[in-house]
Image 1 (cartoon, helix red, strand yellow):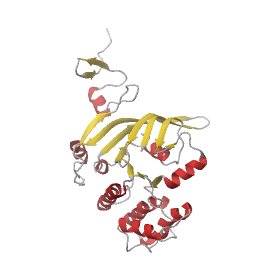
Image 2: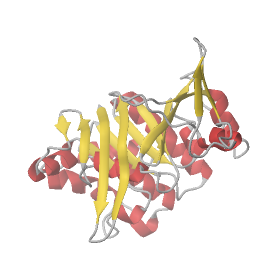
Image 3: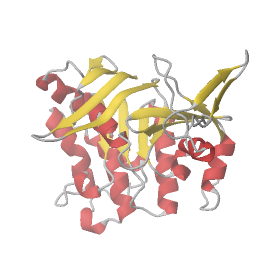
Image 4: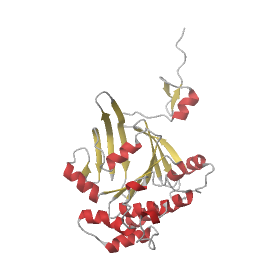
Length: 293
């Protein structure tokens, strides 16, 4: 469903150049539900904007389904955003039109696409648990209800890919669990591919695969040992439960480069250089011996 190979994004101004993505590689299978995690400035939001057709890549390869997002024309990009991808923002104000009802908000992308399917719009709101709130306007809905309307809107034109940018960042833990349950149901019943960008390890632990991004490149992947396991969403020991439920892998790019987890480097006090040995079975990385004397 998604193929990124050597993806590069450079932002330029008159006197400044920032490389947000520097050769990122990632694959997402059709029907997969996965998460992307990373600290602020890691490049995860840049990747999401490119996949959503909101930003253009600078170089490399990026494909979503049949679309080549590096070579896509402006007219094709409109069609791509209208038919292939749905987007959910953390900020509800970007998802909803406040002067419309919940039902009218869901129908808006259908109208822009040229065909309103009121029965399907109602069905989407039923799916997200808002069957009794269809005629309510924005100010009559809680933050969690607004975010659930946003999920229904993102699916209005039956996209094959759903992108969610911190979808539970502005709601409480109970509502967050409800939203993740909705995602799982939509993923299972509609077969829609779902990519969630988050910094919340508890949220990431509820999907089968997690890709970590650091400095504009994929660094590690976490793959759930038991795909049927649903973790306790409690606040305590979130990181520990994530590590116990998932197997962690270091990701190699096509050139054989890998990113060693930052915690490992700090523990070994490795900064600029490291020594490497191969004993026939294992590759060992050590802090270099002092070169003085």
